[in-house]
Length: 127
Image 1 (spheres, one colour):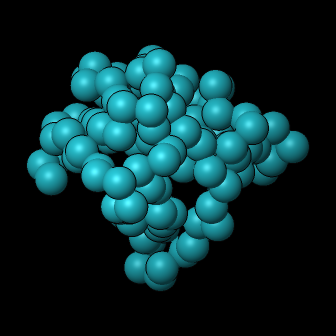
Image 2 (cartoon, helix red, strand yellow):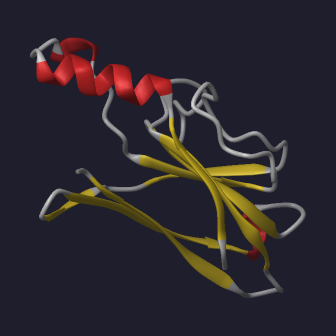
């Protein structure tokens, strides 16, 4: 799977700024992953997945050390009607995903067959 595009979204940059000056009541934590079928290139002004066939799940992000954070979750054949994954988003949670997402990435299409699943993982190195 080749990564095609990635964008840290403007909403996430605002959250980082708020944390740096301890304006944390407005800070949004990122505890969700979403997948979809859109190949529209990732851009900073987006707020969510761009496709119409999407699925969101809650996930516990982890701090891996050395300025690395990671989110990981399994998505299977039954999660998308078309069974084709082309995009992923790190979002607030499965119910609050249409604004203030952290990042969106697109990649080469993954087509799942009946019974198949893929572990979707997003790792961000802060430097």
